[in-house]
Amino acid sequence: MNTVHLELVRIGKTFLDEKLGMETCAIAQIDLKIEKGQFVSFVGPSGCGKSTLLRIISGLENSFEGEVFLDGKRILKPHNEVGLVFQQYALFPWRTMCENIEMGLEIMGMGKTERRAVAKEYIRLFGMEGFEHLYPCQLSGGMQQRVAIARTLIMNPKVVMMDEPFGSLDSQTRNDMQEFLMDLRQKRNDTVLFVTHNVDEAVFLSDQIVVLSKRPARILRIFEINCSRPRDRTSKEANDIRREVIGILRRERMDTSPVGS
Amino acid sequence: MERYIPLLVLLCLWQALCSFGIVASYVLPSPIEIAIGFWDLLTVGMPPGHLLYYHILYSLYRVSLGFSVACVLGVPLGLLMGWSPRFHNLFSPIIEIVRPVPPLAWIPIAIVWLGIGIKSSAFIIFLGAFFPILLNTASGVLAINPILIDAARTLNATQRDIFFKVLVPGSLPSIFVGMRVGMGVAWMTLVAAEFSGVKEGYGLGFMIMTARDIQRPDEILAGMLVIGVIGFAVDWLFRTWESRIRLWG
Image (cartoon, rainbow over all chains, first blue to last red; front, side):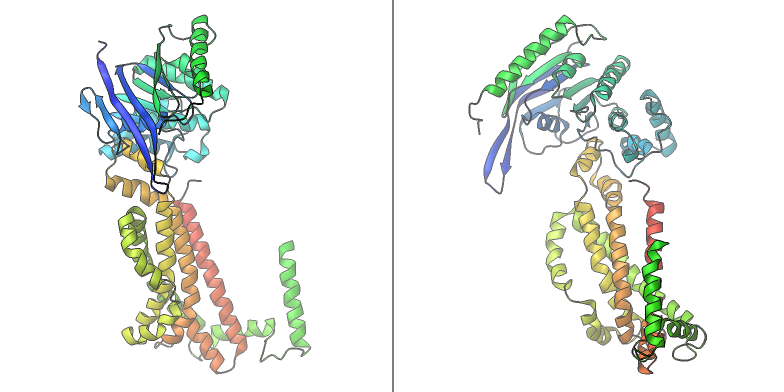
């Protein structure tokens, strides 16, 4: 138990703008160890490099400093052991819900009847029966996001990453999705890395909240949340943590010292 | 129904101008004369014995030959150009030089190379259809949201998977646009292509050129109308085909 599952060692990222010949440092240095089955949220000012961090962990970025290890093995390219749910859902518009969810299995080479059976199971688990044959443009935002999550989870990745998955949903749908995600965790106990702007959301969902600084990103503080689940959004503990996180973020925003380059 | 009123008024006005002798019928035949000319094309033929039906079939044959070759070459090449920046870089200078040359300017050299006949006319039609298909396909690939490619990569997609499961279906709407534009240009070049490359004695372009030679403006205009209507029908067929295949938004 409690062994390190995902390890980030001195992660840094600098973008080079070729037109301007300018370098922008997005991530200064991040060291982090994450245990199996943890739900870890990343919060920080907008544009601080949270999404870039997830892209690095997923293996999508080619050039960055430092190393990412999953169960001791270095991640060098995208792999279905690390799943990523994108901010804008990134569903394939030409595939139906069912075909979107099956995409990973299809790439694996699983036969049609077999993968359809697995997809059906996930569609039921996600409460989306009856919509299987609709295209993404025919689905609501909340439903599209569930399809995106199902498409990632069906591969049973060791780490599930979500990049502001509920950012564009209205607050009611957002709450529903948060609760849905918690129910899902009861059943599956995935390791989740979750990027959000929303401190309430982070407090409601996470075992750990990692607060990042503005660009170039580094870790300002890590909160451990041990409240039992299901959580009360208005409990005293939740409020205390929320207040503290918001305080750190506000100070970070007020601090006008020049951004390092 | 309201939308057809101006057309009807125009036709009546036209007929009146001709009937009262204000416009000479060797310059502009009246709608009724054109209708009779159309009937002559169906029953007598132009030149006599060469019926409209066969002209249409020969023209469709030439257009489909040139157009099919344009699709077979244009779509894969366009996919490759959109997919690989290197490929794009290597081929775009050639394309940018050849593309602005009007297809009709190729007629003389086409006759030298391929002789008068189906090959040279299909070649001209091919040139007209090829570039819209190629460029629309390539820009369709380039317009695919890169995040979809990333999404496929996180699902372990190989380059081959990305090509066939993301780039091809993702550019399908643009491929259809390219094919429809290409088909339109193919019809436009048809008349000129048949001007150069007909030895069978059939073809809509050949038909209206012959009608001009023997001073039958009614049959020229009837022939033009036929070309227009067939062009419209073919476009309609493409749109229907697209809506069958492309079920998403």
